[in-house]
Image (cartoon, rainbow, N blue to C red):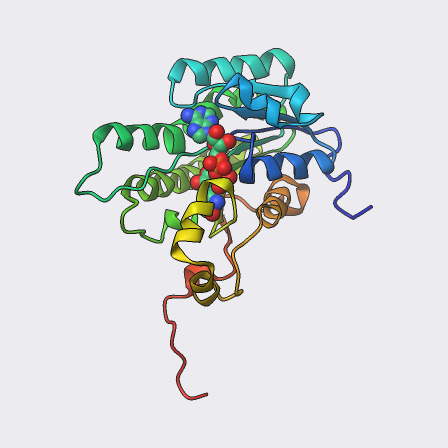
Length: 256
Ligand code: NAD
């Protein structure tokens, strides 16, 4: 038993893109803390990767399609009158520099990574407002502020998502709804394992002050903090979980 057990007892949560990776770890952490968690992913088949109880409360929707986002909100509302924690985690990444970036990939990245979070939060406002206090967590990235050459669409969408958190925090504070961004650095997941392999883990050890890439559980622990009453006075913030990576621009030391 840890002091986190039961901190979300009786609370209801939804985590988008929780069929795998960081989203799955967040859904598991919120479940372990006592919340009734609704998992989500793009396809109905994504449910197969889950175990109970997440498997039993799984909702499928393609967040690139407006009508499916509306359907997701309606499906949730059919089960629950109240939502205490919404984690907008789902995202795509199709790295391309400006020279070759297609308008279709720019649009898809924008839709899934930024626009869908705005729409879903808006559609679920009645349920979020019905909670005595609610927490919306937008999973951004250190690339909400740190430019990444060759990954223009992703960086732009994450910057927009971060600003969504900040504006929504102001607008929704009177309703008792907090809105924050959670910005991971280089975290080991299926989606970026190829990049970490190709670039070389030794180089990440040098670039990241903590000396290693991060684990999904370390991001989930930060999400649990933002979801819980421990962060009751935190809104409009970005919680960066990156082992110091985004601060490490100056890589030389003078003297000793
Ligand atoms: P991932 O690709 O493993 O997970 C993303 C999830 O989103 C998947 O389950 C995927 O199916 C879902 N998704 C994608 N498109 C969708 C769509 N159209 N409709 C519905 N669901 C869709 O990635 P991850 O590494 O676990 O990343 C999770 C979040 O963390 C993302 O927002 C990502 O940008 C962010 N992030 C990750 C890292 C990292 O190093 N892994 C770093 C910074 C930020």
